[in-house]
Length: 151
Length: 481
Image 1 (cartoon, rainbow over the protein chains, first blue to last red):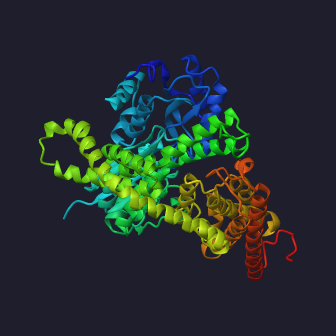
Image 2: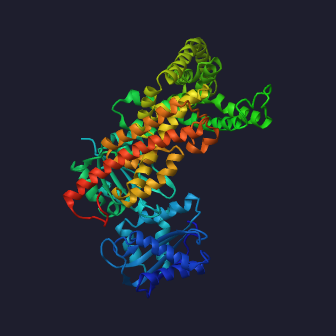
Image 3: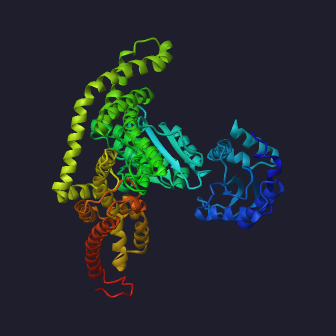
């Protein structure tokens, strides 16, 4: 898998996050650190707007906040998990704690990255995958599990 | 019993995540419940795993899990469950169970879903397969031909701005730029019939058909058999290749390359050439006969012609009936008859303008969305985009379409009576500089539009007053006249 799409530094698990805003700020901060964007505010705005169109909360504490804006320089996956639940209007009513965030540049033309992101989304449908991710104690486990999605 | 087959289409506005989650959820649920499923995804990358007509035809049911348009009209007549993409993800099993239990309702395509895709629409309806496939082939030819007509026609029209004889080197108004524009535009027109024939044949028999149709079309065009000859050449060319394919079926597979590069073109061109050479004379006679019939009609009975053209153009606004009138107009343009098109254009411009004027003069009987759409229709109408009137007509076709037909007929009749000439096949008022009798043409269209607008307005007023009487509420502070 393309190491730029996801690497260990783009995964931060068990963070002390309690609100949606904090989750988005964390995602944007990682994106800035990793050179994915230089405009964290636009990323946060984009994520918020997408949430307003409809929740990205999935089930069992998973959410896939995603955004496609000009300020994003390259497609990337950023993974954040919280050690407490965050209210996400998820369809099953449960708070979310595991966030797989998909960041896509506005002008993304190549389809490989989009297909990779699609594979991640598909993976979350499977309960056993969700369980492994939710109980992962370190970034390596998360990394390996996701890498499997592209195999 | 054969396993149950389901087709599904998923889509979400961003097309990055949920589209594919729904796809996976449906597949997972399908394998659990032991049914076959094919899921088409409308994601950011475009449509993937596209459903073929065969897939849809064979399916026992359809699941639409989408928050965007997934071309649902394709599923007309199939038992269908239509839900949001979220339900596709979370209730995949229930959705499939609904199909298994036979509880899905039969999908009915809305008129407005189909209007912009007349080719697909034609092939979907399918109750009259043969006629529809003929129509589909014909439209494939027409849609490829139109850009040539538009580009060429407008260039020729511009050359007329220098004076109607400005391209003639012997005439006193000769202008070299006009001559050049005229030459370029004429090339576009010369390609019209060959392209029409080529793509009718291409629709029937793919690329080998195109080659043969093209040659047949050239023969028709050079021989003066016009667009009727082109249509004949297209169908003859296409069917020659289909027939050849059957005859050569028994040839070993290893010779497939030889077939497509050598045998199809050689034998196909030979046959179409011989047939068209023999046909070109009678076809030319028919073609000329029809054209003179139509132009006689123009002179002898402009009112009847106006009613026919107006009613056809407004009947389905961009659909097959409208296109029939329109294609005749463009074909006649190619023959140098600019009168016929003037009426067709007027009749196509009128329906959106009717709705635009109606929402302007009868504001309070329309809701805000309709008023906005009406405003936009000034632009759509002025640029010959008849489809703008569809949303209004779709709400109450039985009443609105006849009103539009009346308005369009008035515009067309006046246009024919004033002998206005429009040399460009599209563009609405943008081509006014090249219209002969531009002012009269605008007046004709305005009269037709206003007649329609008042009829429409009075109808809206009546139904509004009725509503008010029965409801007695929701009066937005305005007095009812």
